[in-house]
Length: 455
Image 1: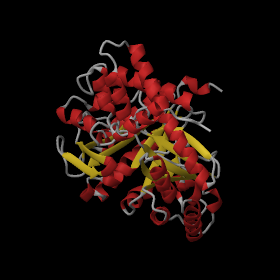
Image 2 (image 1 turned 90 degrees about the horizontal axis):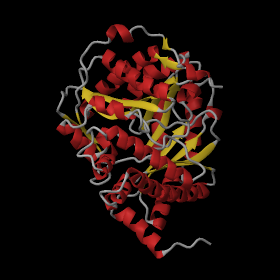
Image 3 (image 1 turned 135 degrees about the horizontal axis):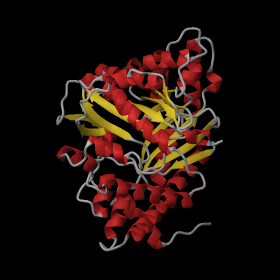
Image 4 (image 1 turned 120 degrees about the vertical axis):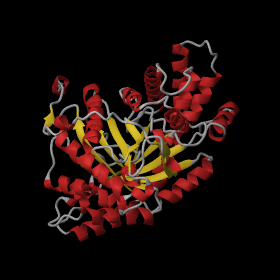
């Protein structure tokens, strides 16, 4: 039997009540490989039946555990095998229909999001991949809970620039189809380099081909907890002491996440997968990665030194988390989504945090350019260039990077896009207006760097 000291119990209560500690998501990872058929309607029926069978108790059990441990579980989610693979065997492609099936199943089991309307096209597209990519705008605008991701680059394969161009067009069309919601469909779509196959966070979650039949993955949070711990430090504490404080805090957060994850997996009678250590902010006051930067001594996010502060934060979170769990996966580190971080939003409004600074920060954070709103009339070639730049950072550094960018229809720099909930709101940020048309139109593949031959 494990005994907890009074001090540790009180500390955990404080983390929950005062510093916004929560379990950001419990995500059921589910393989749909056995749902393949030549008839798309049969595929749809199999998908619906399997999701509702395995996930029927996910939301209920999450609520029970939340009440038992008094730890908020913010989201319940499902991640499935990339739908491009599942629908490709059909005689006639109808990926929009399959997206609607996913949405209906997610609604039936009362989860917040379902990810996996995805394709892996880093070296090229099959006919099924291209059909899925073409269907993304309609699929995301016609559904409420479906999220989509497309991997267009890896450190081994290079960057598929043809797919980058296609995705720029897909992003723009997705935003236009939901213009009345500030381009919401584009907020459910992400382009990846080196995408992980066990990520519990949306919009990038899917179940990789090498994953088990099913598993329970957990995404923890806790920027407010880290900020509070840093604020308690002596202002003259050196960098090593600062890093150690973050490591110890990450250890406690991860321990809480694994406890909840294993309890959930046991209730569902499925294997426990991974804990994703990512510090995921919310629009709530105090639950901010930018707030950690200020506690470290920066005037605001975007000041010179921000990238160094983020590098240390990311590294310390991973070091502390890996000591707490043997099963760490997903993205793991610190997220910097502009619209989902109250102090990041404010820094962007004030001009302290610019697009170029955000791009520099992505070289050391967990993901990349995340939930950034840009003018709706931004040329597709500019969006393609933004994606290509971010994919290059991931490819060269052998890390996951991503772009979730929203060209908000009919809005200009300085105006606000409002989504509500965890997606928050964001100012429309300025992008570089210099033309890159001739460069991105070269298409083909940017070759992988020489370290791709490390076998």
